[in-house]
Length: 207
Image (cartoon, rainbow, N blue to C red; front, side):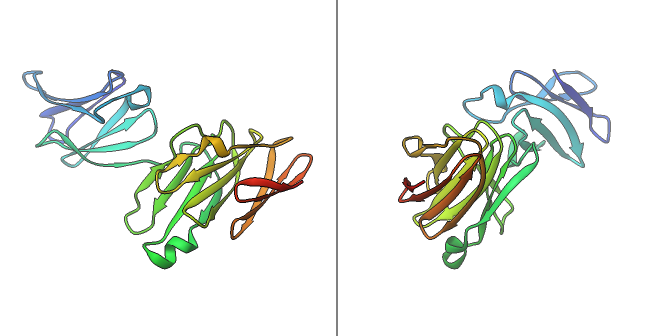
């Protein structure tokens, strides 16, 4: 157990544990009232590392950085918020999606995490698959619901915004750490420590 917290009326105790559960106990009997798991298939990042109360709502923190809001009467998570744990180093607004649907934008951080945000709800989705292993220095949304990102890990990666997954077969290796990225339509320019790369259609067209 990493953390515990008393409810405001001192009648319940909330705990957060490495077994990927949060538990609510009756303080007078120490009997569990609810056991809450954050996902059906919990992994290491779903370990619960901290907790607190906000009124009658219980809140836990996952190792991944996700905040989980628990309805204590039902013993169920009613909402979760995910975001960055490290400094944000890049941002790109999806102007194409903005014109058709609700506006959204993408952010990336020094640990390589890429997130896509819904500006109406404030919700965030994180990119899955084999992502960057170091800080991201540039992002751009491309036609066809694709997101391109360049990193200090010497790669340019493409993410499908439909599946929110990195397209591993499209990864481009650079000759040094990326320093900047700019895009126009489906053309992308990436500056590394040694060269300038021009990409078109997801492939290097000039160097």
